[in-house]
Image (cartoon, rainbow over all chains, first blue to last red; front, side):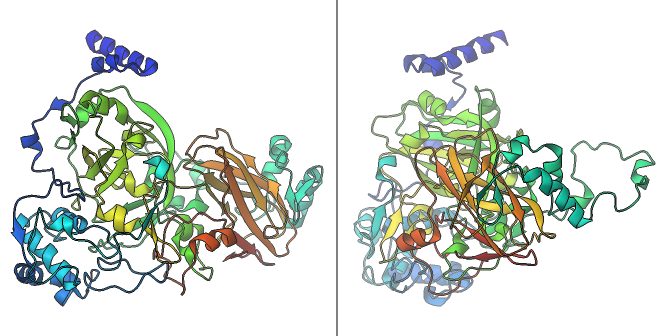
Length: 176
Length: 441
């Protein structure tokens, strides 16, 4: 017990004096973890494509997956149901305009990321990477952001330019 | 008896000069007013004057009381004071529970009344099985258990947490008739205790290329937000306790990210992963939900800050006043930019203002309770509060706010979120009967 007390005091001193070297004497109670062991949780995707998994899909492959796993909430062909439509969108001509993939979302990787981490609602993180690519392709094609035959994969997806890509103003740049 | 009580208090208070029109009195009345003032200030609650009936012992004072429970519950007479729920049946959509600011007082929100928003329900997390992983652009990826985090030196701080969509009904072009709970119930304030995030990041060893971290929850959406490393190394905390006890499930049990003064959604609950990266992830909640459309069609991204705001909680809609006389105007003020430096109150719709008393302690990025003695003459009045923070930011008037951020074309549903980050002044109109309505003034 006394040993631990000493190490906590050392950490407190390190905090108080702000010396970087002394931080190594902190509690150090985190367990080093191998990236391979983190992989099941490591689903972050960045807009430049970092983190996109292997695999691919097309709109034609996505259509039956959507009909089976998504249409019950998002409606036939993504026209909306109990959950928001994933196709279409009115111009942003009012501050309360509904934000859609077509009229608002700035990055195609966000579509992939959100489907993979959160959908389907009742069974999140059960889709294969190919299914997520296919659903992403299906939704982007429904919105005519990509062509019907375009293949989405780790290389092509980040290159898709969303219609509202340049529609944003960073509110407080000095806080980044 | 009502009149007699008012007269008695009035004699005492007449010694204090009015500081603004329509009966606003010098805030120093609170410092010197004593018992007579205190009695006169409770006008909302009094149902009749003391002495109107003979005193007698109630049954509750003539028999032994109940046994003490292991975890105290409030009086059965208070059980109706509750959060309002947008999704009481837990349908597959977002659930909001709003704080009843008009029925509580002070600066700390009781844990059971702290607002919550969950986008896919509240997960039932076994703390033994929960892990927090820090990885990405670090020298040593680390995994923490709740038990290991609990052994770290801890810090406590008071901090409000506010949803970016709080006060959103006030984007309506017409004032929506609703309580302060419906309008402003998505903000609360607690004392949070936990481990400084900077200590944990330091042990992991931050790579100089890291500029952001992606915070992720253990909920079914794996809700994720990008947080600038600048904030993470400043005053961010992995919070384990809320007002002295473990976090409530709806507030992220067993651990949440606390980013004092920043948009509620960024304070990721059920925190299980922090990945350090060189660019923001542009997640769903940051680039879609919590980006705000501006007049003209562009949108804000990375608003982060909950800016200076105040509103009057008593009186407010639903709290009728019981005849002319003395009342306390009271409310809360807060700013994501630091301490509140001043709150001004008006009883005539902003034509004249008096400075409110600020309840000590006045803490950075936490609720500050303001109070203003008021002698209501029984006529129409429009009550407003306006706050300043130590960084020099001033709460905008509604006119100023709308000129920059716009308003809706139609009157939206009170539960809707037409836009976000609304922080203008709120106006309550008191009519001759003592009823209080929401107005734009």
